[in-house]
Image (cartoon, rainbow over all chains, first blue to last red; front, top):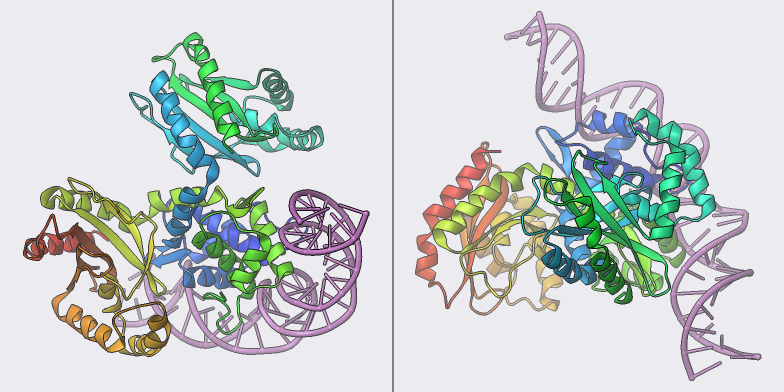
Length: 252
Length: 252
DNA sequence: CACCTACTATCACTGGATGATAAGTTTTAT
DNA sequence: ATAAAACTTATCATCCAGTGATAGTAGGTG
């Protein structure tokens, strides 16, 4: 509920419209108007106007069961895919990385306090469950910490001070201090190894991607399972992973 | 310029924001702030506010070269793909259609005065150039006429009365009368055959998709080239195409 | 160093967004 | 079949957020 918007109360209209869109994004299956209103904390009349405006533009569609995202989203996504420098640069490098390691490799970027998977190349034998492109994951789990490690102290402090309150309820095992410790280690090493963190037996090795000026722009990782790959084996791919990250960095 | 928005002057803010997004959608490569302002006909200050709001939310990203669509678009698109009833229902049917015919089959829906490709399954030997998923095409070219054929007279009249003025400039061969004639024929037959209409040697056979109540919800087509398939051969697939359309229709 | 361009910040004004209310419509229950 | 419950659309006075002219700042170029 309430979601991200209305910080300070400026740019309300647009923020609310985006709230509505992301409401539908999170929902699986169509939503009724009143569902959207409740979920996003808006007045029904406001929701109705917003939804209709988005519908007129094709960002939302309506059927008997309710409202859902519309086909124009696909048009935007296509434009993103063909234009985005980072993902187009990264894809061939991920392909090579997956070829040499036999594992699934992927690239994700930060967006707010989440990371978004923008490219993925499957390994020799794809895993039973792969993150789909476009998937959003919070920054505090798994390889997201690589992105957090680039935050300046002030931002990080603010984030961590909120962290315990917000995340304890949603069932995180780690607390703010654990997280800070992990972030510090990532800063030293430049990579992060996640062992059964998100799912039992899931392994991932994540490395930061920096541009020519040294600013963090993304992260790439190799993901596998404990059955297929040992931790040591995975770590042995670190040079390849690091080289891949460097190759992406210089090309943007 | 000016684009779709500001019809009547209501819901301005949101419409303008969407204009900005679609501005970036059309552009290949990043745009400067002033480019966006000029292209969308907005004041620079307004553009700046809008762009920053969209950027805060991840719908737009900025690099040295300018602004472009952001990764959140991918998240929305992923949600659309997994939720959209029509495209998920259609895909297996398109797969079967492509298997039996050996041709590329696709599904598109109407959005405003354009159609959007929402699903595609490649044939045995994919063509050199395929429409990508998310591609927008005006309704008056090729199989789009199948969607136009479902418009009621009043809407169609208004559309056709604008047609000559708007489209003659953008190099269409057909005029409003030609178009009306073609639409009438589609209404009788239920399908449309496009022969070298968009590109020389390109052939496509498009059939309407109606739901249980008989309202048009989409169109499916088979697309091929003159070298690979004769017009008669393509027309011989009409029963399969029609059956596929029916199968989609009843499942939604 | 001066010039140009791109972007950001400020602020008074005003018109569009807002939300309470009510009417209309569809779906569900009895 | 009828009632009722839920969902959606329409109306409108109030007021605040969006607007855009202006000015200021940063970054790059000749």
